[in-house]
Length: 211
Image (cartoon, one colour):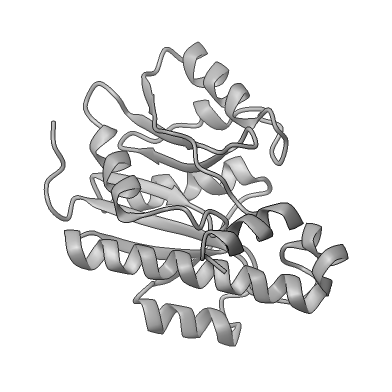
């Protein structure tokens, strides 16, 4: 089943770019301001990729902010990249993701959820993820090389993949596979991509021309 034009939505999770509160693992190498600047550049690269994808393929997108919807940079992102803003809701990442997916599924046939840490995303990755969602396959993931995942998508959101997952660990994708398998749900996995969490990742992003 191929995707029809405009039948998918891309939700992006982000934080307001405040020094000391974003990319904290980079602070020892780059300082609080430097880590914030790296975060902001990664975010804007992601927004540009999503914006181009939406314009070319009739999709839509939104920005889901963890903290401050009124931050001036968040407002600028919203205006520049045509991203309506929403506040993330929930005490842990799994609850917040589920709330986002359920909310946007009310308006769109397929919903993809990504963060801002994976500069390797291109439009083809997003289109392949949307195409993987069918009546027989309600979930899709793009694993991360570090053991997590950089994209989750669904056309039938449920809590199963997110139950009792140890977020921010190398076990996230493995635990998610176990949860979704135990729920007797089908899922697709695309080729892994890498995200930026460490100073070595920053160097990789610079070598590849993303920063």
